Each structure stands twice: as C-alpha cells, then as structure tokens.
Length: 305
Image (cartoon, rainbow, N blue to C red; front, side, top):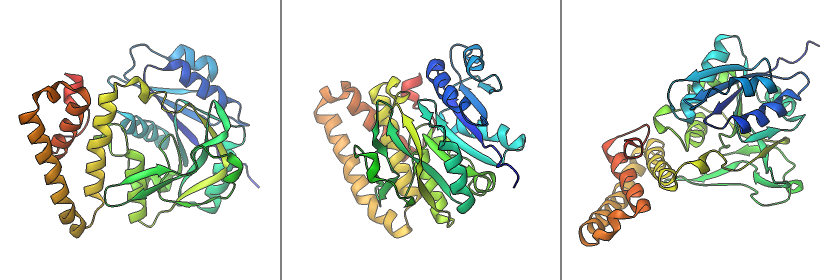
C-alpha cells in the first residue's frame, strides 16, 4: 500500500513567533513531518529565522498587513493547493499536536472524505481535561458552546457528528475546501469557523469530532492580546451577521423586532445616560450592532483609526 500523503498544515502567525515556533516543533516531531505553511499576518518583525530553526522546510508567506485570521488561512490554503496539496489542516499557532494527531485525522478522513474534521482539544496546561470535543449551536441567534469543556478526556472517546468545530484545528480534503470555498474574510476574526461549518451543513457536508486525534491548546493566547472591547465588537457583530445569513426568510422576519428593540435601547441609553458613551465595552457593542445594520465588514474602523 502506498504511503498516505502528508497534509499541508496552515498556521497563521501575528506578532507571536515564539508560540508559532513551539507549534512547528510539535509538527516537526511527526513521522514524516507534514508540509507546513506559515502565513505571517503583517507582523512587525520577520519571523523567518526563528521558525526555520524549528522546521527548515517551512514555507513562509508574509502579508504586508494584518488581514485577519480567515484571510491568513485562505492565503496559506491558496499556496498549498497551488503546490499540489490534497489535504489541509488549519491550526492556531497556540496549539501543539501529539505525535499521532495528524495520522488520526488522516485515518478519519479516509472514512469520511467529504467531512470537516476536528480533534479533541485539551488544555495545554491540563491535558487530562477537555477544552473542546466539538461544538453545539442553537438557532436563530447562534448561541454556541464547546462540548465537554472541563471534563476528563476519558469521557470523550467516541467520534461522532457535531454541529461545528473550532477554527483552531480544522482538517479537510482539498476537494472539500474547494467545494465549500474560502473562509469569509469579511468577518476578519471570530466565528469564521462556525460560519464555515454552517455553510458545509447546507451543502450536506458533515462536521465530525475525531476523538483519538488529540491537540493541546493554550486557550486564547493570540486573541487575548487584543483589547477586550475589540473582542466584544467582533463577537457581537459577527454573531448578528451569521445569525441573519443562515436564517430562513421567516426566521429573519421574526428576528427583526428583537433587533429593533436592542437598537432602541442603545439609542435611549445614548440620549439619557451620556456617561455610558465613555464606557469602552458599551461603545464596542454599540458599534458592533450599528456596523452590522450598516453592512460594514472587515476590521473595526474605530479600532484601527
């Protein structure tokens, strides 16, 4: 039997080369190590020297500005596919694979070649406990959470279908990526993973947990470097966008009155409680809802001006 082809691993780096180097170190321990494409998302310093010290064969793609996580993944996938990759593994840079992780995902892909696959993700600081064993989403407002969070890993030994899997580790064949299309870059950061899995579901593509593929995750190490208001802004704006995008016409009509009530409350607070205008969290949520209504996408203008 011919050897199983190695997937192309896409890792996005943003001013965090030391953490990315640790991720590459874990990938380099594979037998054989996979092809790795690091997309540097407009970092202040060139990470090439540090990263090539961990994995000499790493393919480094430097973007001139930070275009967001989704765009970084798409940029890496485009180069990998152009160079002949037939499998893609998207990884956050604050993750580390176990020696058998990639092979477990490949084995699962041979059984479910059209599916989006996600590993069991454990806390890097406490690998005996789960951070995510897949995700659940409840419509219409896209309330979502991770299965098994905080539970012992031995409670999650069975692979099964799930609603979504986190973008810190997503495995697909090249054919599935092309069928789905790239991640939505207009989201910039947050919920591009949920959106992708919902798009897949509409096309009849499953998302599945691969229980025996274990990934260690230093939870939110990258996004914790963002100001909290920015995190709130992207989470709020993108939730509204995805909720309306994936709702039926009748559901969208039913969602309009609650949205109108929310906007009215914001207007009343803005008019009668001027002290709230200086609250960074209040401003972030206000901008998020107004930008959703105005159709503004990409990076938060108030954060980058």
